[in-house]
Amino acid sequence: MATTCWGLPEALCAFPAIDNTTMRQTRQAIDTGFRGLVREWSDVIDAATAPLQSFLNVLEHSFVDAPWVIVLAVLLAVVWAASRSWKTVIGAALAMFAIGWVGLWEDTMVTLAMVTVCTVFAVALGLPVGIFAARSDRVQSVVNPVLDVMQTMPSFVYLIPVVVIFGIGKVPGMIAVVIYAVPPMIRLTSLGIRLVDREVTEAADAFGSSARQKLWNVQLPLALPTIMTGVNQTIMMSLAMVVVASMVGVGGLGRNVLQAINNQFFTIGFLNGFALVAIAIIFDRTSQAFGKRLQKHREAGHE
Image (cartoon, rainbow, N blue to C red; front, top):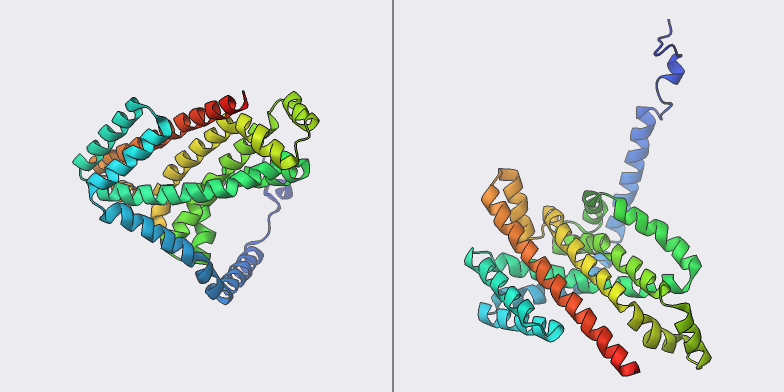
């Protein structure tokens, strides 16, 4: 006797999905093929990621092994050179002193090295892609769906293919962070260039500027505030992803937060979260101030 629900036949009650046996066999075939492909190309993958591992190790050892006075002096010098604001420098100094005072200096240096490397790679990848997307509607139409998927995909899902391909360690975590953090850089670079006043670009064309000259002398300077917003968002997303990436072997503050969640240590989680927030604020204020100074310098040079 056919069962009914809401007065409908059984065929209309249960969605016509693939049966479990077929689905299981399909998943096994895909997973086995993917792992086999990774094993076949493992030597190439290791060789390609070796420079990233070396770069990260050098930067991390530099931050961790150097005396804290030297690291703090260099950090404050960079903040001053970028922002030219004593308020920003004093705020950064107070935040770093607070981090060191609660015993999180070394973990903060590990996280700082990771975020620095990830931000550099995300900007280096996102800036040219954003430029190409801004200059071609066809490229934009291809890039946008990819970015939509990258931004809506749960962050934990990034770890699955990364771990299968690269294994457990710092480099897989770094790659996952870069993939998660690069979309805003691409989007805002493209948006900033596309929002440049058409009359300005037409004037550049009238004066005989080449495409490269128009890009570097007109479009990028005018789009700089939007691009720097993209850099800020990339930094913030890198810091947010550091906690998730700690699940695959990334140390620093993210690992401490993960341990605090697993063991319900409120104080440890709060202190490490505070350190992450402090780093985020330092990066944000410094990059914003640098972007404003750079734009003013460009505008003065064109007057």
